[in-house]
Amino acid sequence: MSQAQKGICAEPNLHALYLTFTVVDDDVHAMRAKLASVLDLFSHFDEEYYEAMVSGVIAIGTDYWYELYPRLIPLELAPFPNMQSEDRGAPVTPGDLFIQIKADRADICHAIGIEVIQLLRPHVDLFEEIRGFRYLDGRDLTGFVDGTENPKGMHKFDVAIVGDNDPDFAGGSYIHVQRYRHNMTKWQLLKTHNQEEVMGRTKADNVEFASDKKAAFAHTKRTNLKDENGNSVEILRQSMPYGDMAVEGLYFISCASSPKPFTDMLRNMIFADSAGNYDKLLDYTIAETGGAYFAPSVKFLKQQAIE
Ligand code: HEM
Picture 1 (tube, rainbow, N blue to C red):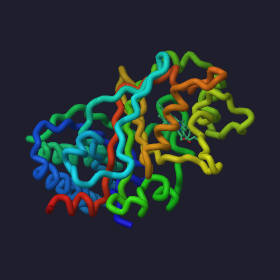
Picture 2: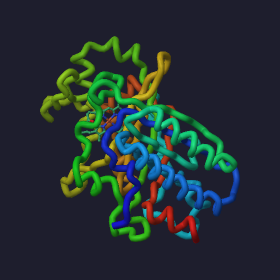
Picture 3: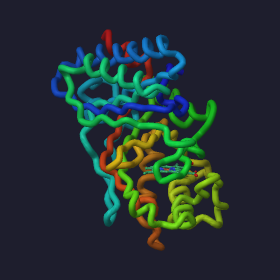
């Protein structure tokens, strides 16, 4: 299978820099060449600072994809699933390019970010720049460990990477990004055992509640889905906390071999079932941005640069 971009299945790091761009001109030939140069930039920093575990992802917004590579379209390319129910929503915000830079050094993330911007500058506007960081032992700012049930080892690739069913796009990944902002004041007013009910896991030692002890509104109940054959529906989450003294939240990233798992999970979080249960976590956090992207294989990006 074609080589996937390194950052898709990368292990958790200490730091991340997330750059979202809108493209402001129609020079697609220059953009194709520059995206391949961004890949080279990632490799250069990875070799130069190998101890920093550098990785990157270049993902192309689903609308911009049709402009950039009009002759080749991933089979399941689809816009971000805009959803709203009562006060729970998933807004769609601008994003033609999404670049994820991860490393165990904040200075290296910064240095790569600056070079990426210098390369892309005449063609793009920076819509948003967010710095992610590892918090304690891999916790979200709600205090709960995040990522425990992520697929592991080689199974990550099965979950996150397109296979040979779409040969031109084998090695690619469907990426969904949402920046959530937590209402920490409201969350902290909840007693620990109520927070644990919302998550369906214990807080301090991160133990999963038995299935029959999980509330129907628990986040891990609403996102734990099975398909029609009883197999688990899975995504690979690359999320990290972000924030400052005023704003705190989770920069949520889903990588998958199809856009469907993320869409089904999000629907199950936002829309209530017949008993009125939705994902109670959404009473304490709100999605402020949303974008759907496709991150093609290394080979695809390089080939398109010279065609
Ligand atoms: C602010 C937003 C979110 C926070 C703070 C959050 C936090 C967490 C935490 C603490 C866990 C339990 C540990 C783990 O397995 O990682 C978890 C599990 C999970 N989350 Fe989220 N999450 C958020 C948004 C989402 C979204 C938007 C999705 C998908 C649409 C999602 C999908 C999942 C899945 C699939 C699991 C594993 C469920 C299981 O099988 O146990 N999460 N999340």
